[in-house]
Image (cartoon, rainbow over all chains, first blue to last red; front, side, top):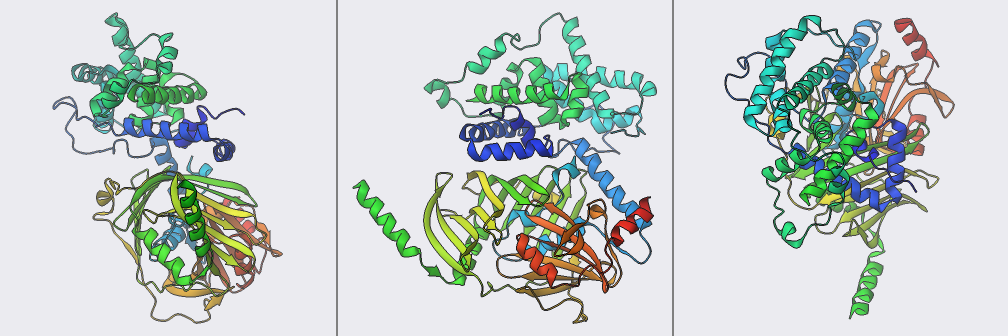
Length: 138
Length: 167
Length: 314
């Protein structure tokens, strides 16, 4: 049985193709060494991500007014762009939809469903997520 | 993904300066060097912006940063503060810590910083670009001029080395 | 001595392997809601379009649940939800009411004993429907957290499996959740004063309509539950256009054509009927999805969505 190796890091980072993700999930279910490796890599990653971000010394950069790009939020710039594009597509769809159609997004539906589900005890995290498949986010 | 670059040099400095500085700090391990490097990068950005072809702006920016670092290393004619590539395997194998090491393994930020600086440069830059700068694998591949598969492998091996060093 | 302990455990398990009251499931759920922990959870669902899986980073403390995945962070508290995408966009929503779903009479709750999961002692609870084990839960003894959940289809195959890959039983740091939610505009869903009783049925395939809300552009949103699963239906007299479903190929369910997309542990459906447009989202397994659709107005004009989108986007 071939172990997952660097697929594990890619999987944690959301950098696997749907086929690879399926392979990882399937393999993890029956491979204990890979599960521990996933845990260890995850821990190493969290440790690195927890490093404090330093402020540049005064005078190095122009005044900190104006544009502020949030630093190292959980995700990547690319994914952010993808999200922006999705929003743009929804916007276009809304603009172009026949005047008699009600334009809604999966996110709207999902938010309502999630908020309402969260009103009940024992809500599972899965109910809270916007259910778009992974390839949509890439 | 193509992007539009409405950015002026000042906007690049304001938007990315902090990240450039942090990337530089994690590469050099030294605040003064990081400040120098940041300045050098911003200078190169200023010179390069007029000729910048819309494409991947971040790939471009981080490639400049990394090249500035490598140039600096070459100029100072010293090796990066990291083992030679042949030593990597040995580093990876040095896994089982002594009881004393275990006792001492309170993971202060400093330990992590030191461990990170011990990674060979190609692993360090991949890990830092991924986990500290927050780039996608594709952006990293553009920045370090390597295939995505190589980036994937470097990030994974880099994290494994970190795990071993921090154990 | 060891043998004696084992014997006692077995006896205890046997004593517990008896039907429990539906209230007990609610008790477990309430305890799970109050549990404090952090961990990484993997959800895998198998459906006609293949398999969907998702790795989630989860932290829960003082009734606040924070879920992080690739490009989204969600913070939930009772009746409130805020999500933030990578671009820093935050959406927040609050629902104004919450009638609680009773566990439907067709379910029987059985505490099937103690087990081990991730080296932790768990209470195993099954929800049976006749001879079918519809759902199997494993609740952590110490914290009450739901460590593993399995949901099955009518034929006994597994629809979704949700389990922690790592789990830490201590109050986690929720990070900058405050900053994410502070000062956000919250969309509040209110119950409309008057709802056309015909707009959404009071019951659907054994699910109770718990709340009705005013949706966008005079649409009506109903939330249904049966104490185990739940779903939301949006209905409008006008066509409903769900942008993300536009390129999903139409699927045939019970002889009718729907737009459908599976996400981790949820399904989204949309269709056009002779009485207006519908969209639905829910976590019920495949056969239950079909049963619910069977009791809502059928897609009246198959292929409409396709024609419509072709007209829009060529």
